[in-house]
Image 1: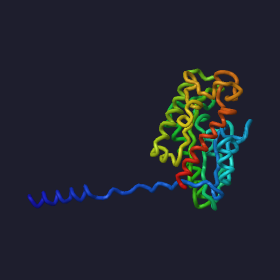
Image 2: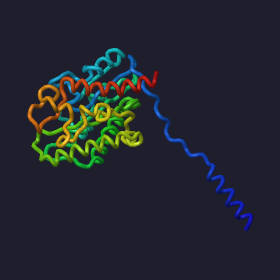
Image 3: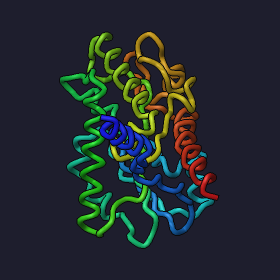
Image 4: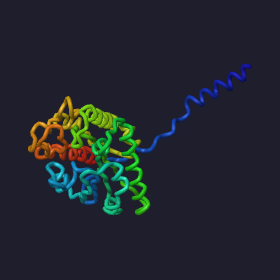
Length: 263
């Protein structure tokens, strides 16, 4: 009996002191320079539309010019994560195997407020994001033998709507987007969708971009036609002017923070 107890004790000791397998190594921060290729795939907030593409706006435009980064923008007004998943060939064609490739992707707003329905479960939005990143990585690897080196996921901002949804649905959709952002603030959750960094507009500039679209209007909604494109209450969606410059600045600050860590 004493021998058995001794063996059990020894086994317990071995088990307790066995090394824990290491997880995947964290990627080093990226650098921004002439050997960096940055590609944007997103919605109207980012598009060259009634205003310049976000890569040319304010602090982000200055960062791209000063660093010598190659930048391409394939943002399309009205797109959704689901549409982006199926229409990514221009984005993939902009991939440069000879450079460090950074995919900046952002949507969620249109996916939440698709015509005819409002998504109120943030995990549905998370899964749409994961599906998009998984597919574009797989298709890029199939074409080039390697995928995007870094994925920068952009979060959400407060919105109203142009489809005449009842206020309770607008509120529910905004709350789902806020919960989506909260999920992505956790590094493990962000990694679970295949992203490396998160542009958190609601944290970086809460006064301009946070809100629920009903009871707490975002700051950019305060000046119709000046900081928000729409002029009728209940339809405020698109930041313009100083608000869009603030939007671009959030992206620039996130990229710069990572690049500074690589210096």
